[in-house]
Each structure stands twice: as C-alpha cells, then as structure tokens.
Image (cartoon, rainbow, N blue to C red; front, top):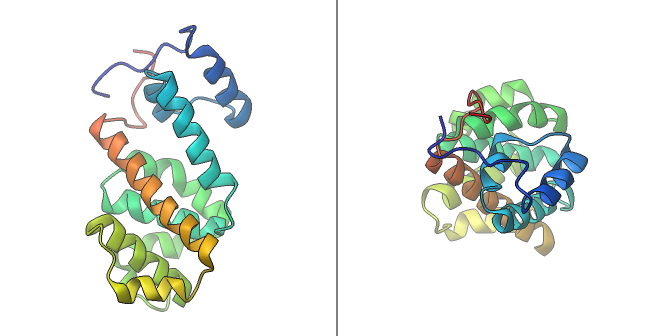
Length: 177
C-alpha cells in the first residue's frame, strides 16, 4: 500500500486536472492519483510525460524498450506492469521483454540500435555518467533532436520509477482507501 493516501479526485483544486486526465487518457492511474496530492506537480508531470510519450520523434518501440529497462533496473514493477502492453503494441517482442535483463548477452535478440540504446539506458540509470564510447554509439544512430529525446526519455522514466518506489505505489493498491 502506498505510503500516504491517494488524492481525493473531487478536491476542487485537482478537479480540472482530473477532468483533463480522464479526457486524454480515459482514467486516472495510481501514479496520477498520488501526484494529484499536489496539483501543480501533477500538471507539470502530465505535460512533460505527454511530450515524452506522444510528441517525440523517438520510435515508440525504442521508447518502450527504454521504459521497460529503466523499470527493471530500478525495481519498479508498477511501471513495468503499465508499460508491458504498450511495449508489445509498439513493436517490442515478448522475446525481447524476456531477454531484457541479459540484453548484452543476447545480441541475436536486439539490433545494433537497440543495443546502443540499452547500453545508454543502463549507463544513465546505473552510473549517471555515460562513458564516451556509449555516448558515441548513440550519437552515430540519432540526430541531435532524437538524442535529446532519448536522453529525456531515460531521465523521465528514472524519475517516474523513483517516485513510484519512494511512494510505494503498486498496481494492487486500492486508491479509494
């Protein structure tokens, strides 16, 4: 169970954002129910993550591969639960999801671009500082905009998973309690 109660969706300060999230996404995920404890934070978060997920040139499959790897590295099962069906829909295969924890040992499962992205994701997530050879490998695959979008995606989903785990948000929580 989450460390603090989920937000009251009828709170007058949160209500406009609740309506926006429902209109854009259909429902309010546990993550947003928690973020709505601070409507300004929830609004900024929604805007940023909408840009990452819907307005970037980075392919959906690469984005979701990054998200699933970050969730795995950070031990964030809620994030993985939410994004597994999205990853499959975007073209990540079940074989790739199954191999993700040992991606570097299975070159036949991931192409050169995916391996470069996964190495970059691992470096950003585990060490923060990206070794030059790993940075060079992604620079060879992406233009400047795409490299910024890749970097922002890794950073954003590290933020997401860290928030989820610090607040102990889980898919099995009853957000109405």
